[in-house]
Length: 141
Image (tube, helix red, strand yellow):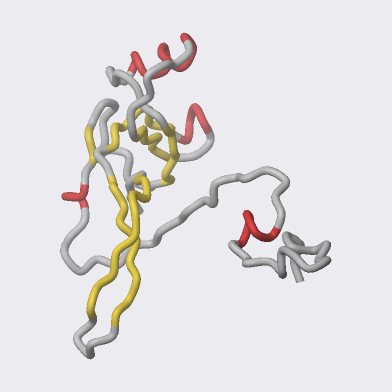
C-alpha cells in the first residue's frame, strides 16, 4: 500500500448524474519526498517516511535528518508501511501519478485542536437566547 500526504484547501460541491448535489473536500496532495526508508533489520518494520509541504524555520537536528535525503525543508513527516521497499529511493518525489483513474483511496484526517473549548466553538452550536435574563447563552443543551 502506498499513499500521499495532503492538506485540505477547501470545500466545493459537485452534481451527480441524478441531479443531487454532494459536498466534496478539495485536497492538495503531494508532491511528497521520500525522506527515509525503514527496513526490518535496523528498525524492526518496513516503511517509507514521506515529507510534505515547506517550512520556513527548522531546527538543526531536523535539518540534518533532511540533509541525508537531499530535501530542503518539509512541514510534515508521515510513515507509510509497505512490503516492497525496492521501488523507492531516498529523495524520490511522489505525486498523484502513482494512482490510476478510478482507484479507490482511503483518507485519514485529523481535526485541529482548539484547546478546552465550549460547544459553540467546538461543534458550531448556536446557543440559547442572549438576553432577557438568560444565563446560558453559550452553554450546550
